[in-house]
Length: 319
Ligand code: KG4
Ligand code: ZN
Image (cartoon, rainbow, N blue to C red; front, side, top):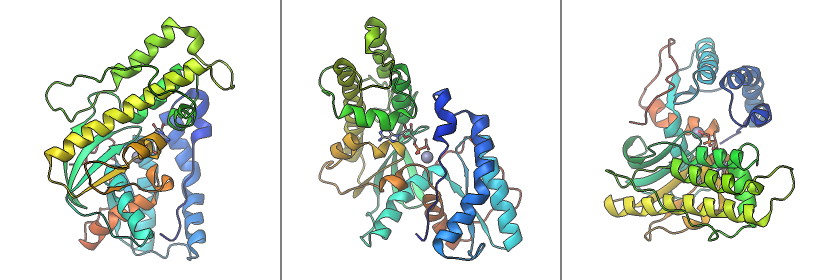
C-alpha cells in the first residue's frame, strides 16, 4: 500500500445523529478530487500513474456510489486504463488479506470463515477462496454497527456510537445488566439486534436519569448499561461465529468491518476454537479505498473490467 487517504464526513453528519444521504453525496463530491490528488502525492507518484482504477459499485448509498463511479469512469476513460468494479463487502474481506501482506506475514488459509460487521451489514461468510463466497448467516433486522449507533443515540451519547460506546464501556461493569440472547427461528447462524436495542430503550424509559444530557462522564449506572450492551452484542457475535466454525470446515477466521475496531470484540475473538483469527488494523477496518484496490486485484488479473456505463448497485449482494 503506497498511500491511503480517507476523508471523514463525521462532522457533517454528527448534528443529525446519523448519516444524511443527501449530505453524504455532497461531501463525496467535495472530497473526491482532492482525495485522489492527495493519494497520488502521498505515494510519490505523478497524478494518473496507475495500471487500473478500482471503484466501489455497491452496496452503499446510491448518491455516494454515483459520485465515485462517475469520477472513476471519467478518470479511467481519460487515462485509457481499465475500470474494475468492486463489491464493498468483498473489500472488507480483502482488508484482512492486505493487512497480512503489509506485515509481510502469511495470508490466512482458505476456506476461511469471515465475520463482516459494519454499520450496514452483519454477515457470516464462508470464503472458499479470496473470490468465492457463501453466506452462512446474516442479520434479520439491524446491523451490529447500527445497534451501537442507535443505542448511543438513545442514551444521548452522540454519533457515531460505536467508538463512543467502546471507550465508555471500559469504565462499566459488563455483567451489571443481563440481556437475553435473541431466539432465532430457522438458521441459528442468523443475528437479530433489534431486541437488545429495544431492551436498552426500556431501561432508559424506566430510568430517564440513565440518559446523558451533558458532555460529562455518564453516571456509573449508564456506564454499566453501556458495558453490558456491548458485552451482550460481542458475546452473541462470538457465539454464532463459533457455531459456524463447528458447522463449516474452515482453516482460519477473519473479522472485519467498522465494528471489528471494537476493543472488547478484538479481545473476545482472540481465540475461536483454536483457529487463527485475523483482523485488519483499525484504519483498514472501517471504510477505506485501499481495501477496494486490494479486492480489485484478483478481478484485474482475470480481466473483469467494467464498461463506461457502469451503474451504482446500492443493494449489491456479496453472492
Ligand atoms: O465499515 P464501516 O466503516 O462502514 C460501513 O460500511 O457501514 O462501519 C461503520 C460502523 C458504525 O456503525 C460505527 O459505529 C461502527 O462501525 N464502529 C464501531 C467502532 N468503530 C466503528 N462499533 C463498535 N466499536 C468501535 N470501536
Ligand atoms: Zn463498509
